[in-house]
Length: 167
Image (tube, rainbow, N blue to C red; front, side, top):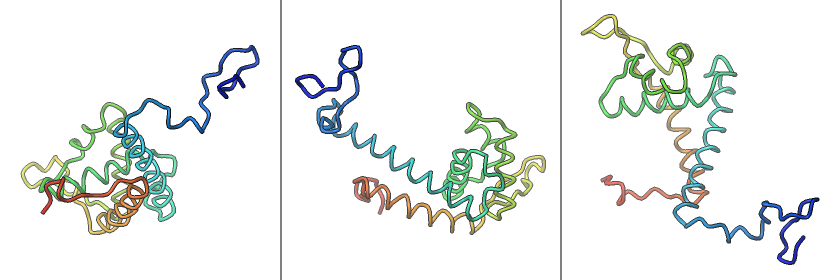
């Protein structure tokens, strides 16, 4: 350790590692710290979501990325609540920069098998398949959104309806 209490490497140079008691000296403003905490709460939520999805058998293949699965759940549920029914192609478009259409289709296959989605032909164009959420999707959504709210509150984030425009 040098005179300031910083660790020194074996060759005598100042190590870049920070001591835990210097956490208040990191140059992040309160909003940046809040965003970092928000990211951590999201990671905690997603880790718990993955554990529960595997435990309850909603993911047929454990090795598939939960990121795509939970984002597909979120996307389809949110769009449906907003009055829009998505097709497989539309969902795949959201993820095209980091996964393939085949991977998205496999996740959707798992969700259909788990009873959270139904594929149905579009009455206007029978070549298109619409993805209709089931009540089970929203039952799962309620459980995990509640968990996400609790984790967010643990990190100091509280929903404020007056700031969101909610009535």
